[in-house]
Length: 274
Ligand SMILES: [Zn+2]
Image (cartoon, rainbow, N blue to C red; front, side, top):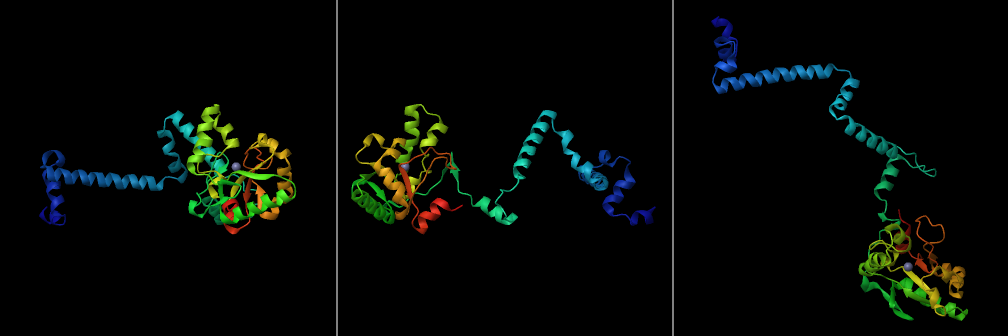
């Protein structure tokens, strides 16, 4: 007996010899050791059982644990998420996985169809001579001055009504007018951008008017004026384009008065980079 127990570590020897139920009979320190030993053995046995389970049954384990309703709702959400994630690539997309991941992570932030824009440094803005309230980035301002002069020479009274706008300006135009007119968010977003999402923040967007027809200011009827016709034929020569033509991708209402400068690298990247 002595030889046998000598081969057993002292801590275990005591429990083996003294009692068939050591956890009940022994002091706390010994019973704790016994419990830990049992837990370890059970744990190893459990791990062994898990290890030899086929993969399919391992994957199936969590499902019965969830309540039926929650489980099916979660499953439905997961199915939707999976179908969205697995949506086929755009027809023109020949990109690799990594390229598409990059384009996703670099996607510009947009809200209600309007892209997010950083505010221009107001110190960099230049006022337009015919309306000092209207300020633009220098290159755009210079072109607008030339356009007003050239349109005048051609018999059109082209003028400006709005250029750079601050967040506060846009706050008023979006939220305050939305409330004043009782418009829905979607309806308001068709004719105005939320603060932070207006091209006017960039200092490269401008609203033109016809100086002889104030009733058409910021109205679709502006397209019937000599000023608009002059813009249609000539704006591209000055680096300007219509931001929201009819049927535009952003689903913003047609705005014949709202133009943007895309005649330099900075403005081009602002409006076209994705
Ligand atoms: Zn505008």
